[in-house]
Image (cartoon, rainbow, N blue to C red; front, side, top):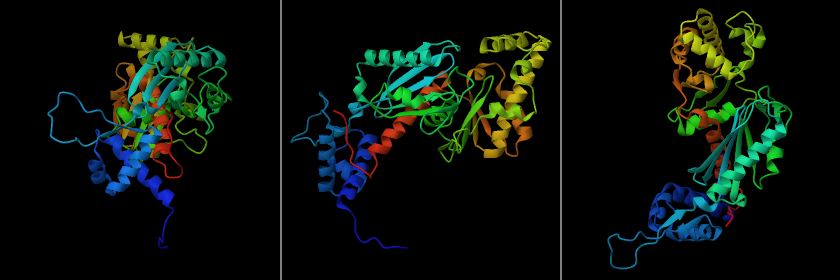
Length: 385
C-alpha cells in the first residue's frame, strides 16, 4: 500500500469546508465551539471555513431569540445553514396529471402544485402543462426561477442517462423525446430525468414505507406495472435504465394481454383505462362472478410479475403503490402468493406517500445532485445570492 506523503492545501480546505457544512446543516444553530467539537477540527480552521461559507452565501449568523434568559457578557455566535440560498423542484409527468414540489436546499417542502391532463394529450401539450404548473408554483411561493439549483423529473418509460425517453407506451409522443433537453430550456440549472417507478422507490426510502430498509422493490401497480428497486440503498437502474419493466413479462408468451385479462364478457375490455378497471373491481365486490374471475386474473398476474423481481433481487421489503394500490384486497393475495413462489418471502406494505411518491422521489434526486456539489471536494462550493 502506498504511503501518503502530503496533500494539496486547497484540497484540504475543500474537505474541511464539506465537513463543516455538513455539520452545520445537521445541527441546530451551533456555535464555533460546537462545530469544533463535532468536526474534530481546530478552532482556527473552523473559523476560517465558516467565514468562507458566509461569504459564499451558504451560512449566516443566527439572530438570538428575544425573551430568553440574559447572561452577562457577549453571547457566543451561532450559525445556521441557509436552506433559502437555493431551491429545488421535483416534478411528476404522468398520464393523468402533472405535479410539482418545491423545497429549499434542506429538502423541506415549501410549496406544491398540480393540474390534470388527459392521457391522450400530445407531448407538446404535456410539456406546456409542466411549464404552467411550475410557473404558477414559483409565483405563489415568491421564489425566482433563478434560485432553482436542480430539477428532478419522474415520468413513465425507459429513460437514458441524458434524460432521453427511449421507450414509453404510456404517453403519446414520449418515445424518443429528449425530455431532459426540452425541459432544460426552461431552467438555468441541471434537469435530472428518471423513470417514475424508480423515483417512487427513492421517495419511499426517503420519507415513506421503506425508511428502515435498504433493499426494497417499489411496484407501480397498474394496467402495465413497473417497478423500481434499491439495492444496498442505491437505485438500481440496470445497464440501459430498463430494470424493473415487469409489465413486459407477458410478452414472453406466458399470459394474455391486459385488455383480455380484465374482461368480464369474453370480449377485450374497451376502453382499457383506470376508470374501466375500477368498475370491474366494483362489480367484483358486489359479487359478479365474471368480474371476480377478472380480478383474480389481474392479481395473479401482478403476483407473478412481482415474484420475478423478488426471486432475482431478494429484497427485504416490497412496497405497492400506483392506482391499483388503492383497490380493496390487493395485499392479502400478494402476500400469500409470494409466500408460495419465493424462497424467502419479503415484507409487503402499501405506499405511505400515495400519489405524491413520484414527485417526492424526483425532489430527492434533485437534492442528491445538489448535495454532491455542496459536499464535494473536487471543486469549490458557491451559492447564488
